[in-house]
Length: 365
View: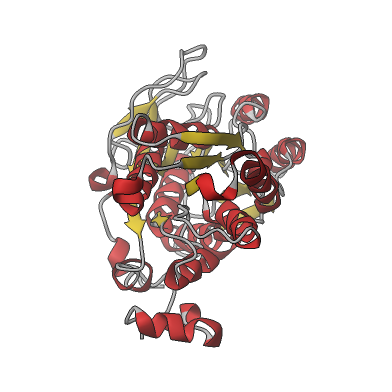
């Protein structure tokens, strides 16, 4: 994967985020005071939330592992576990990491509230926690993600662009993410800021566990309730759900603009064919690099001041050192300039025999 495209200073990547929630605990702004300074032979625990979304195993895990190795001259170790969308299992995995005496934890929480006590346990054991992609509750020491309200705004604006003058000619369906994911609430908020008053929302769902099959069921219900002739577009919070939504739409003989997020390969291929209008491309290498940089620095007893220029508040912890990475609206017009240019996919990855004709039509060769 081409690294040069992502050699952006962490400070330059950061954008401001409004504080959310009230403070119930006071979090430390840098490394745990109980952590002795270490050299390169550190042990980093990495807990990712699920394996249904392609990004976690394909991008996040290998990118973080690679960056930790680079930053520690090959001496750092990443101990990995995936919670498979089970918050209870993830809490058990934190306990295991504590038993294994990792020096720092990177946690992408299944449930941002349910992880709170485990984050406290880790802190009490002298293990600082970096919240990755989702703002976990508890005394976290650092956080990196994307500007999630901007993601929702980007999706909403793209849907308005696709609808054009027909934006109020019928109903749209909003398929939001899981209520256990704080990012989903921010995506939804951002989308509503753009869409409210400009479209008519016929049905809106919070989709359990982000699962495509649940989105499919919800979409079938929306079609039944609204009537297929009245649906003019669908806001889908991510690509996985967009796949389930599009299956339901096709079964009903409906072709309307559908949004997405994550630039999954299947999503990009649906954009090529026109089945999906857009996705949000989130430069995972930037996010992963920052998480690794934070983890290594804090495990070595260093300050995060040179990495994290911004602060955010969680419902439990104020002034968490943070880096938020910008996002890009991905459509058929900029596939070459985003996921291909940045080495996420090759043309061959996208334009398999099934999609070659569609690729040729948009000049993707």
